[in-house]
Structure formats: C-alpha cells, structure tokens
Length: 152
Image 1 (tube, rainbow, N blue to C red):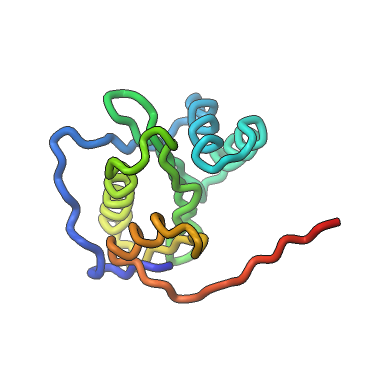
Image 2: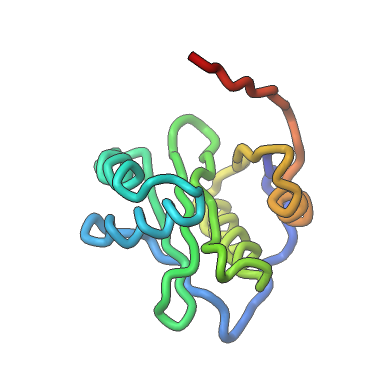
C-alpha cells in the first residue's frame, strides 16, 4: 500500500495519547520482545535480526508506550525515495484501543515533516483490521502478490 503526501487524514491530537520514540541500541531486547509478541515469532530470532538492523543506517525502529509501558513497535526503512514501514504491530493485550492508529498517525506525521512524498508498507490482504486501518488513514493499494508455502 502507499500513501502520497496530501492524501493522509489529519493527525488527531490526544492529550493522553501514546508516545512513539525511536529505539536506541540499548533497548534492543525490549524491542525484540514486543516485536516477537506482535508478529508471533520466536524472541531470540527476532532479537538477532533487530541487533543487525539497528546497526544499519537505513533502518529506524520505534517503540510505542502508554504510561511508560511498551504497547507496540514499528520500523522504517529509508532506502530510495520512499520510506517503507515494516514490523508494525500492537501487543495483543492492547489491541482495539486505537493505539495502532495513533502510531500510524505519528509516524506518517514524522515522515512527511521530513519532506517525504510517499510512504510504502506491505500488509497481508487477509489481515482485515490492518487493511481497514491503513485505508482509513489514506493508504491505497497499488500492487498485490500471492504467496505460496513451499513444503520440503
């Protein structure tokens, strides 16, 4: 999906909203734990990848916190003319409270403030809540892929 500058909805100001802050390398374990839970992957596997990607100048990761407690994470890949949102998730126990929308609004606002013209992301078409969130924020589909599971 993609979002062009000028097609996003206005950022909603929430006085008691979440805080989305860029992750530093010393927070890699917390980030990995949150990402693993959100994405349903093994924490150690995620932690190794997080450590690798935190060193890459093209990758930035963010933790969302509510009252200091981590509730979600997302990453941004800054390669080429359009940043790519990756690893976007809200912890299962915090879903359906508007946190994903707040996270998306904040990252879109940050990226467009940097004079970015277009933001990209990938989503499983079967993930209806995520697709609806992205559409409601102004994202539009521009291509679609089928995925196949290979069994050995």
